[in-house]
Amino acid sequence: MTVLSPFEGLGDRERAIFAAADALARGAVAEAEAMPEATEGEQHLRAAAQAAGLFDLAQRSERETLLALVVVRERLAATGAQRRHAALGPSPGLLQQASPALQERFGQPVMAGLKRQAFAFTDDPRAPVTAAPTHDGFRLSGRKSFVTGGRRADHFLVYAKSPEGPLMLVVEAEAPGVTRDDFFETLDGGQHCALVLDEAFVPAAHSLGAPGQGQRQAFDQINRTRLTLAAEAVGLMAYAVHRAASHLQAPRPDGTRLGDREGAQLRFAELWMAVFTARSTLYRVAQQFAGTGAASPGDTPPGAPEALSALKVLASETAEQVLSGALQLCGAQALRTDDPLTRCYREVRSWQFAEGASDLLRLSIAKARLEKGRGAL
Ligand SMILES: Cc1cc2nc3c(=O)[nH]c(=O)nc-3n(C[C@H](O)[C@H](O)[C@H](O)COP(=O)(O)OP(=O)(O)OC[C@H]3O[C@@H](n4cnc5c(N)ncnc54)[C@H](O)[C@@H]3O)c2cc1C
Image 1 (cartoon, rainbow, N blue to C red):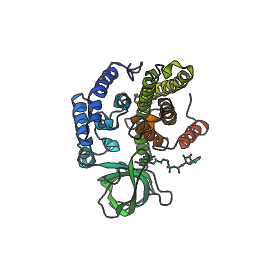
Image 2: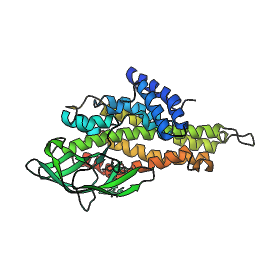
Image 3: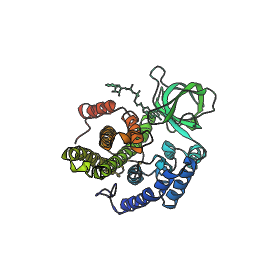
Image 4: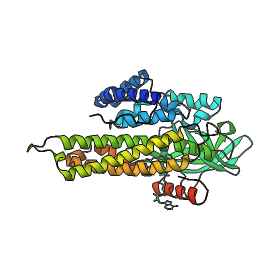
């Protein structure tokens, strides 16, 4: 029985992408995961993804590519493999819409794997980052509390408030006044740090837009990540359901199968239905967000912010329930820390915070409907 089949509403192009991702998942992803050295496994997978034409999907700026990216991320996550991320090349994120000079200096080295970048949005509430204008740039001061991959980053995309409005800036890690501290690891194994800015000078040419554009730019990036994170969540849920099904169907020492008992069947059906619902929402929102309803390429299509918030809450919260329910059905052996099911359980928990805490997204949905005249169903 296959883990995942292509979503019914996909067109020919995305079905072809699904077939390529499916072949990769069954072949190179499984091979890479079995290799003793992580670097060797990741190189093997990267080469196979390049040959399959999937590697650069996360590096392309067109919004239409997002649906294909959802298809690939979901299918690869349904392997439960830790090294699956190596199949997609590093994305320059917001630099895709930056000036040619910024793309050349910062974006292209990121895509080529020569430089690393990190997204610094979340302020330490005690010292939010501000940008004071000078005649040729900005002086940044304050503290970002939670920067994933910050320790190894060569530059940061920093959100800062200036007197003329918020803006996004490229800040080089080695620039005077830029330091990092508070290095920590989260439950999912992610590595993070705080970014400290002390009157750090950033030239005007390193701004991604005029003051006032920063919030829209940052949220376009955050919305894209909410969508791809939901795709990962649905993929991992599909993996969990597959593991539970395999366990229920396997013969036990006394010749019976757990799956023959109605109690276990009922529990299993709850998991399956939850994934079915989350997956339907994922593709509905992916089609809405990747569609052409936006006025310009950087704009979010109407209704998409609420839809993406709802999807992120649904996918991340359901993922925790489904992974936990699958673990329960698979028995205590699955709780081994080297079991992929347990690793996936740790991975999904953090997604109820990353890209916006669940309750804050609920509040944004309520405000859109009750105060801003948006959010029609
Ligand atoms: C794995 C991971 C990776 C991350 N990576 C990055 C990154 O690379 N860059 C970056 O900038 N940030 C990153 N973050 C930070 C992330 O964006 C924040 O954790 C998130 O926005 C939530 O903010 P917070 O943790 O400060 O929670 P808080 O805002 O302190 O909220 C804590 C809880 O309080 C409640 N709450 C808060 N405000 C309200 C309210 N107004 N009304 C009612 N209830 C409320 C909610 O229940 C919420 O869950 C990452 C987080 C995680 C977990």
